[in-house]
Amino acid sequence: PPPPTTEVQCPVRSVATAWKQQVVPSQQRTSIGSHLHPYGCVRCKHGKKGCTYGADCIFCHLCKASEGRARARPCKGKRDRYRLLVDHLMHELEANPTAFDFGSQHIPHVVQEDLPLMQKLTKRMAARQQLLLRSS
View (cartoon, rainbow, N blue to C red):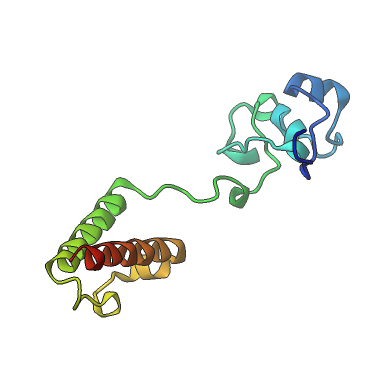
């Protein structure tokens, strides 16, 4: 049998059904898409004020900007700079794995302030160092 779920199951199957059943109270309805707000909607990237579709928009106007993507994708320039940083650190590490000290390396403040990215980088470098030390 499937494991029990703690998620709230949506009683409606579509936006049209939600519109008919008035799942969201009328004073909160700002768009067609907002009817599914309690059950997992898709946020309108324009919001209430900037959306040209208004009440006919199939996306939710109730969500705040912070409820959108959990983490926005960095621009291509930032991704390229991070890739260059990783390549530089890997080159330093492979040149001398026993003397490599991640803490003494210059890490840009933008990367240091991004905790998940810094944790990912630290974990990646430690794993590579372990691999190099075992193979030598």
